[in-house]
Image 1 (tube, one colour):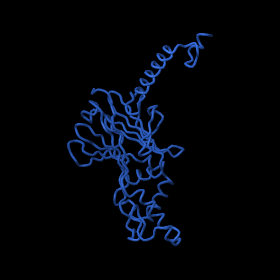
Image 2 (image 1 turned 180 degrees about the horizontal axis):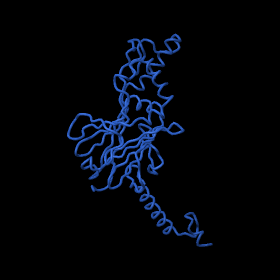
Image 3 (image 1 turned 180 degrees about the vertical axis):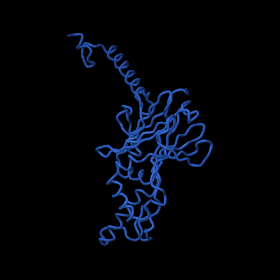
Image 4 (image 1 turned 60 degrees about the horizontal axis):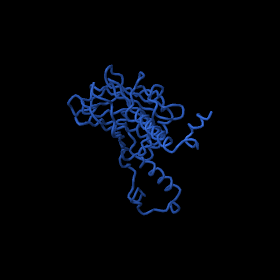
Length: 273
């Protein structure tokens, strides 16, 4: 029992030297475990299917503070796997409306995977009224809409700058999947074959994520309060009910007007196969 008592770092029977030594060993072990569980490069030991189902995704996730997205990156000798958990409703809607491009940046250049592809530019909302309608429609059947996202676009592949449209289920190729779970958490997965990205695993790489933007709404007027240019009417209490409702729609639209971007640096996936 006395021996067990001395395993307590606060115990009086432990000399300062022994206490310091054990603290050092504990710190080294914690750092080693942290390195093994780094969200940017985890060894994927179990089979992984990029279908948007989080059941087989990596155990350790980290938060990207800029976007609020939780992420995990893992790898094996054939693939680099990317898992994203997206809780923000605005970002979810923006991804469904305008798509999400994952840029893989290496010393060899950069390639992009657009998935999901979003709505074609001609079919996106152009004004504040239409955006409200689209958002309502999207949220009503979002799980089914995501389940039908079976196409992706490849950018800067095959030595071309032209976008190549393909299936999310390519044997030996790039696979992708996205789902919405029962608590409205969007889970997106990508499986990137190492053979398709020369030099990807020879050193640290950067992953950059970028949505599209809707641009300036067509029903915007010069007197509308927008961002840092509040225009004529700054005090909401001075506006009529119709004007206040209009201002709310404009403010909501501005959340979607510009692309949302974030990036992960220092990604590693081991030596080239």
